[in-house]
Length: 473
View (cartoon, one colour):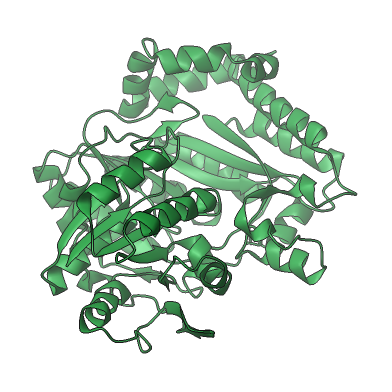
């Protein structure tokens, strides 16, 4: 059969290859004799009309699209238009939004034929077997569908042996100049891809749906399997990898082995990753830096222990400060994200977080107002309290839309600006200047970014934006 897989239409500067779809594509071609194409509408900045035109031109037997809460309605509009023009094409939806709202989607949007909950490398080929044989996929893991008035749903199943999966079919996504941007500043140059060395999350942060998506299980690939793929990518000319693991450093022993193998194989690439602050010792980060891990992103979230406990982060502000310091000492760029607006969070607690930014001085910060997304414990609590509306699951919401007794949108936006201002101010200090010079001397990525940023029109626009000017003042 002819299969087209696509990301949803959108406008973005987050240009990362669609690794999930590329894993599905490689799993399909390894098990079936299908013609598989991938359209990265998200990173190509395609409109809905552009994407529909491309798909209709292909006339696939099966069309699959993934979706987050942010992109759900655009994805639904796309499926509707495709089904209207190609009524015989079977439509499949996957991703976080589809996983957590499967029955609602299938009952309201009858042009969606199937939903795959969770990971789809095993389920998608089996679904195609059923479509080809003209039988219902009643025994296929993770599959949901409506048959007449009956809703059929099989439990989400995760892939246990990740080493058994074929490497992603990256050759199917070559139409975009992929890059890693942070606040419009390009951090990568040359050939870039995304990479996953483990899946899942054993933690249960209240604002995050990763644990539910993975049945709260962390599953690693072996260090040997990871480095085998990295060696292949290096030989193919890739210069940078963004590690999308939820918990890359969950096993220190495995991470150390990965670093040892990268160095022994003489793989000279730049790696960008996320890490938990309670798994960020200086010795580990120093080893990672020597292996090419230049930038690490920490979810600090708050300097208030009460807020961290509400988020069920399982960390302390002291651990966050130490992790940032360890990363800087190891020669890595430390990016820290913060979330403000938790129910019950006081102005003093937000100010404490802003003070933390000034003292810890991460190389970059990201200020976020708390999102309320379906599939998260926070969302479940809002449903239990009868606060959410009947259609609220379809779109993204910020906490101020529900938290009537909390801080307003205006107040939270002002605190966000204040956080950025504290960040800018601390880097203008004498210690900040010394830290900046040290980063330039010790981190190749910093030098490349600095050299290219001078001529980047996006950065000039970023610096001229009113919100940034207000924050800097």
